[in-house]
Length: 388
Image 1: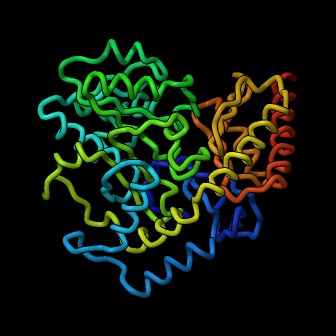
Image 2: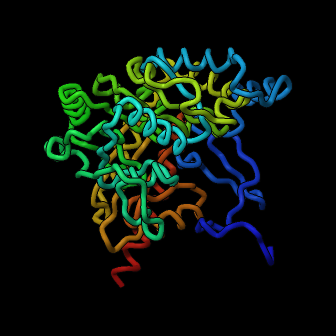
Image 3: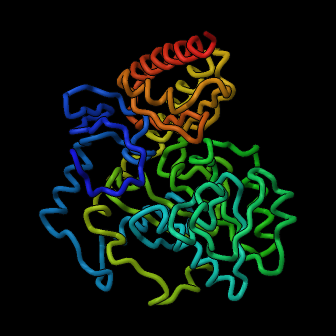
């Protein structure tokens, strides 16, 4: 197009995808790609999934939208399923992860009854609206948007002692990702969440766990905090919840829910019937057997990456099917991502040196083997070019 009115707030690849099926995407020219990114951990069950598509079509033929002032059996069904899966008590539906975080901030401050400070982590990413942006501990996202919302402080990720030192009489909550996705697929030390849970309980402050990228099966548990067998006070959820139909959710304990009264918060489109119909099917599909398979295939992929033994790979980290490959400074993750796209694989990045890998849950060992061969070829190529 010679002229486009579309805002230039993304650095877009020139590839335009036309359709998809399973873990395959096809561009406008018919070229086939294997999707190892899922629209940033969204289309976890792949493209054109027959079960999810049927649920969406059935609901489209019934009703697209109605006000949240009316009863919704679909919402109640999904809320009950999420409550059972998560160990939480109540669920609020919105449209995105950012909105789920905004609700969590409001809920925590309402519960705090005057205490309003929220402690978050350096390297975190919680969204781009003002509350979520202020909670985000990556200052590059702040540039040009100050002043931010007051009442947030940031400490090193993975450090319990840093949180202890940051708590004061005005602290209402600690907000943390179980794995920092946008921040570089950073995995905290073992028992970090357990330590935070114990500390928050001791100090009578809330533990908010951001599961927007790690939840809905991505790590091999329905929510990744379940690897450490804790129960947070508030959980934010989105991305894979409806496999690409916009839907977010803020889950909370009974104690938090009791503070939220009619009129305190809302969303015109939150809990849209089409999105909720699909999400009900997504949750149904994620039974314990399926979650176990995600954990297994994730281990196969992680082991395969470790088996590359490449001098340009500095670190490999992740859990289940959220994985980061950190390269040494001579190899740009963005160049690797671009070359992978040319070779027919869709992957992402997290910063300058981390390749972010988020395959669909339906990926097989055959696609993993192809991916590893292609990745090694491209790293070899880029490393050789840098050594010339």
